[in-house]
Image (cartoon, rainbow, N blue to C red; front, side):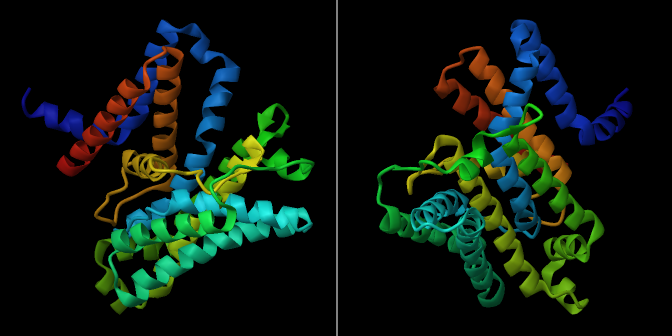
Length: 313
């Protein structure tokens, strides 16, 4: 029996998160049958769409052994830049391009400092967190900026197609694109190689520095797109959006999906499962009227448990 248990545990380990999701769905639906209503299930995906977009885009960064703590301020900066582009009278494509470009520029600066100057990712992105937040406040101040008479822009966050919110379509599109990059292009191989042994990857002919720079740009792109979605949903832009906690939800989703903080191992598809796990947990606890302090404790305990299990594995 003692010899059988490790084998069972090994076989179940890759399926632990989907099994946990199934278990929580069953428990929540028994306690509150409204949990399984189609509107609620769609609402769960809509609620996690922004975090999901950021998490899928950050998976590559964490797979290289890096991290991006600046996604919250980038989210805010993107919305503020898009707002002022609208106020200046530019058409919607230019507005969206301006907001996304602001985020990508931040990611490229962070990536260049990390890749070409060898600076620690946690230090660089922590510094960028402060710099970008300050830049957003300098540009837009601490006030809310109302977005009026912009139906094309507001459709991004509030519109729907065939009864499905448009933000979910964006989440799906970004997820499929990043999965394609991982599975069907050399980027996926290079990312895994950098995470396993960056020096060996470089000697093997991989363009490790350029790739790392673009990976941070991809992460920032996800945050910028999330910022546009948020501003579109609430019809306002603010430099205070994406405050402390946003990056923790994003990183937690990636880690819960099995991506190692040490680099090398990781899967965008499993990151999506991690996103959905946190979304189901948050929604279920909200339906059950669990207080926010208990929710935070539960989320922290789950993340710590996931890290402990990953370390043992």
